[in-house]
Image 1 (cartoon, rainbow, N blue to C red):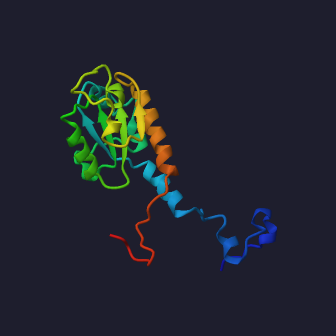
Image 2: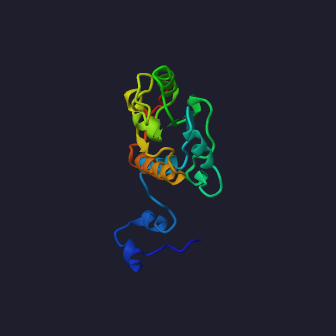
Image 3: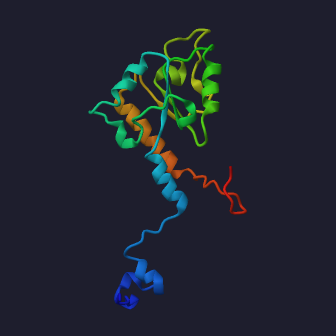
Length: 183
């Protein structure tokens, strides 16, 4: 039989009572949405919408020196229904805009968008009638990664900024107010 712990013998447990004192050293207490935010930030499933030369820099991210697997974003998804991060990589033309919007609409919530490079962010060097001057006119952008092409370190910095944003965001629990699962 386990010996009961005297809360008075442990100054940091002085405010706890009964079972709380027994569990204080072995149980981590947190809010459910905080735990979900922490877990979700390490399970990013990217969908690369690669249209131009920035795609070469995207490929180098999975190599050993950069190792984006430590951010949970190594394996790209090739269907938007399985992805939660849309990485728009390179120039988007006016003709591609409806396709980009359809891909975004097919993604499940919560979803995030990263504008990867100068062309995706602002249209880049191509100031003409066929080039979209930034994808934020079509889809809401959460993270902008500057550069032409952006360095892998810049993309990692963008992923870390996105992780901080994901962790701070309220996490949907999928429960209705009546207690049943939504769905």
